[in-house]
Amino acid sequence: MTLVEGYFHGAHAGAGGLANGRAPTRGKVVPGTVPEQDAADERPLIELRQISKTFGAVKALQDLEVSIRPGELVTVVGPSGCGKSTLFNILAGLEEPDPGNILRLKGVSSTASDLLGKVSFMPQRDLLLPWRNVIDNAILALEVEGMPRAEARRLAMDMLPEFGLAGFEAQYPNQLSGGMRQRVALMRTFLFKRDLMLLDEPFGALDALTRTMMQRWLLDVWQKHKRTVLFITHDVDEAIFLGDRVLVMTARPGRIKLEQAVDLPRPRKADIVTSPEFIALKKTLLEAIEEESMKSFQVAGR
Amino acid sequence: MTASISSDSARQISRGIGGALLVAVVWELCARGLDLPAYVLPAISSILAGLANDAGSLLAAARFTATESLAGYAIGCLAGMAAAVLVTMVPSARSVVVPLATAINSVPVVAYSPLVLLWFGIGMASKVVMVAIAVSFTIFLSTIAGLDRVDRKSVDLLRSFGAGRLAVLWRLRLPTALPLIIAGMRVSTVRSVIVAIVTEMLGAYGGLGWVIYQAVLQVDFVKVWAAIIVASAISLAFFGAISFVERRYVFWR
Image (cartoon, rainbow over all chains, first blue to last red; front, side, top):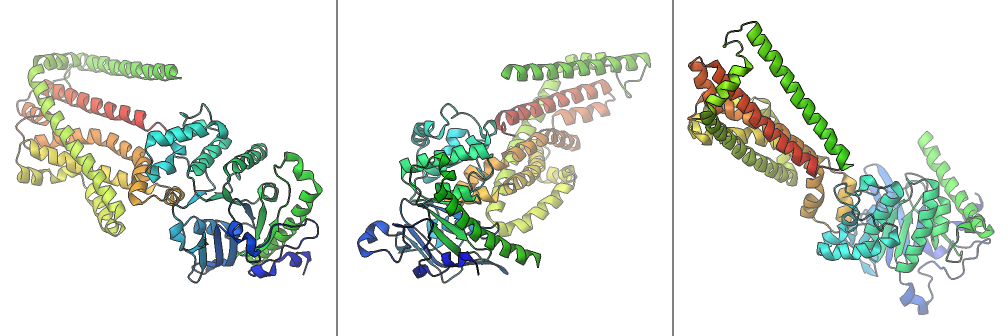
């Protein structure tokens, strides 16, 4: 096997799997090996063990293990069709994993449907409602929760400048650029205040320049609001730039192949992507992803 | 922007009026020049004169027909939408009801007129029922189609916010369906006037269809045409009103 074997994390959290000569991973430890005194702080917000999901003959996920601590920004990368979206749908409460799974929210064992309304979820497309203007799209989740419209609008109005949407509250989605639509969708997600935020390739459809701006902006907003975020992307640079940890998924059936801590200092500047530490991380991650992409390619080509 | 839109519609309206005037002039010239008998084509001028002559009775008939059409239309729209929502909420009912509705809707509704006249008498009630039947099937089918257009991902998003079925229906499915519902309503305006008039011809105490039928029996073709012109005016006004509502409330397409 290749170099990658050393980083193999797989289904066994106890194996550690974080050893990495190039980028030391001090301070970030796999849950389960957490020292006793940190247990209160480091208790995972959400913990998934033995998560499998089968659709007919297709096994999308197999024995997936993830745990996310409060305040973390965890990014997930993987080859296309590796079950990233299935993982998100489970975390959003939209799909039940196969029986025999362990799913704990703040230490309480739950079913996926218990998570409905407890996780703020932003899908790949902005899914703004064309008949609602910016402000009314942003408050959609609050309205569903039963907050009076006037109060929800007031909350949202206060947030507009931070999302670069001041003065645009009365515009309709078809009058906005792609980046602005995405910010409205993000604002809708932020206004739905939940412990865990799931972002599914939120910047995937944006041009490179806008994407870089949005990433920096997201980090600012995240640091100010102290949210726990799970962020799916297929862009390795994005995964490293944003994440405290990067999870690499295997080809289908999806598992966590590699769990890579990112110890780059925050706040991160745009030029960090050219630093040796960043490049080293990127090399590690690309190797892992490459191997998985080849696997799914071979399976598909057989 | 608003200015250019209104000048656009002003141009459209003036073009429409110009076209109508042109048709009227050609009509007048043909009828006079070829000396056509009234049962083939009376001159526009004599029709307008007839309109003025019979203004009182025509207006009463128009009110009669408009009342039937509007009442049937309102009942039909509400019933069609309500049925569509119910069927969408109960998927098992759907596979039975929708093919049945499509089958019933594919027969010209006026085929049921004699039966409805028998059941509801020759007063206004039978016309209201006929119009309601005609309109409700159209609205039912277009509402179903509209409700089906909803994006599964959007439903999932609302569910992830904790929305139940009713919240999804109210905040997502109905607004998504609105463009198709209103398009169905626009088409139904004309249909409702037609059905009311045809049913009146089969048996009534009043209304434009009844006037037309009586005038034909009396060989008064000028009156027939006058009634036809009043009927088109009602249809056009009704169609225009719903089109206005559509442009106003379905602005996002």
